[in-house]
Length: 328
Image (cartoon, rainbow, N blue to C red; front, side, top):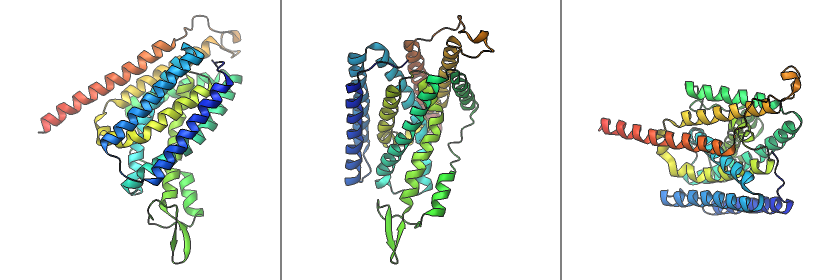
């Protein structure tokens, strides 16, 4: 459902998000450093509080429905984005990015990802508006992804350079060493690009690959492009600081893939039920909606998302604590 939020509100909100992105980028560029755990925790708390404040404002402006969809979508995108951190760690290690410049890499990579995701979101909204049956495909894909996660078919530890990165290596005059946080450097009187360019593209393009399951998932919770983009922005903005906060804790979240599998499978089922309810396929029930197909309310989606994440986190910490105790 596309909510009739005031145009002025959407314009002001998007403008404020844009200012926040630029301000964050300027701060990171001016003071490259490795943030402490305290600093990272404060920034994560800030972005979580900001998302919750936006939830409250959205409720005041548009009512319970868009606000509920936002918080459910934000939690889903945030939890799926945490899984991205495993790959980000691998990319940083693979390209030997200096620790003090990793904040800048993540920030620019995230902005690239947001721009590309915005294109996906607009295209997805246009397709859904005309072809409701695409929910069958989205739902089946999410269920397939959930099954892969349950089976442990995760390619996160096998990062390989994609076609875009390989093309950059062929086209751009690249140097093999970093020059601080610069994108270009002088080598023997020649202007060459540093590996930082490749890392920016690697982070941004890899995140877009993850969007192949997160974008259909968020459309399973809301079809409003403004809310979809807002959930992505708030999730990705908090992701940069979460990268430094979690650090070694990522390895302790051993049951996170199972929680993500439950969430994706649930949303996949929700999408298929919605497709059945608004069925347009002539060979299925004569092109009419299937009356027995239930509509899953947003509160149930929130309950499944929060319950899955909480259970997985607690179970992971209990298991790793026991494992550490046995090791000692």
